[in-house]
Length: 411
Ligand SMILES: [Zn+2]
Image (cartoon, rainbow, N blue to C red; front, side, top):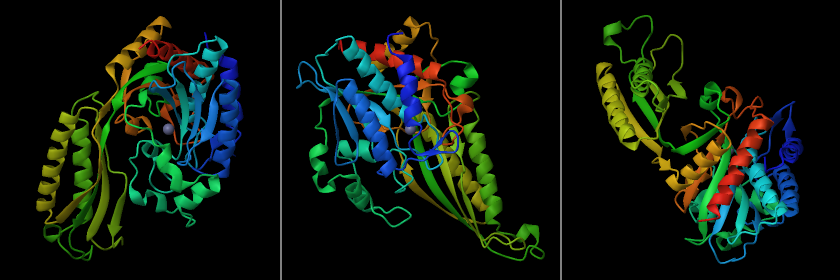
């Protein structure tokens, strides 16, 4: 191995102490004092690796290794150091620490690339504190909505105030945007957060793209009535309709065995929610994702037809509200080829798989070519203190990232 796996392990262990909960958990909210501590620690390693560091006005930590030609578009890599409130030690952290290790290995080998390299820890990837994520990655690309800065957390603290408390000047953030064409490509290593690699017994995966989610809120309206007296044939039972639609979504998403399509009804609110009243109104969410946009479109139409038919069958009215829709974003094939070649050189049989969850790479995909490396995580558990990736696998991931960076620097 060219990277230093014991140094990498020490960095993970030191980082896991900041915002530590229980034995293996992490709680490091966006723009919080704990994230600031994490940034200071990561910045010290960036500086040891020869990078100049600063925190921009979006709350991103950025380390820069100056290239021989500072005017060339930068090679950007990284992920995030904020965590879920009841999160693990590897989500996001892996992408930042492995990227720092790659730069440290470059400078140890006296390699000064032509183009500059920047390692970034994006602000508020997770999105739970202000109920909207990917703040730093959207920010540097000028893609934030005007009201994003005024969103409040559960304690009533606005993002603007949180950023000021963090030491940022939100009024100056425009200057921290990256001009179109200034980023050569973006590389993100991340734990898979799903079970595919673990089940396949493969330490590393090559990401094909980030699947596009459809998020709906569906409201069904029927008629309340006494559960003991209204005959079955005369009911307008909104919960029965919602249950049938949930099953229909499951049938749609599972019709091709082995396909990466996923469909989920994750919440259901029932009104009036009484054991002896037929449900009058049910509101539930739909999450439908696929890497194949054509197939997703067909499934979406299919689901709309099923909702219509099921509603008619039970004499229900329905409203579908589209909360969020994103198209699948494919990784650049030239970067995927490099990652595959690096895996082959390390005797790794690395399968190609899509990412169901989003990552900072999703907004980055609109600004430049991007590639992602997945590292196996045990049982696919993530956003949970039980999240676990072995140091051996993480070192392999860093090694693949190092080789990938060397190849990308030749382009
Ligand atoms: Zn993450």
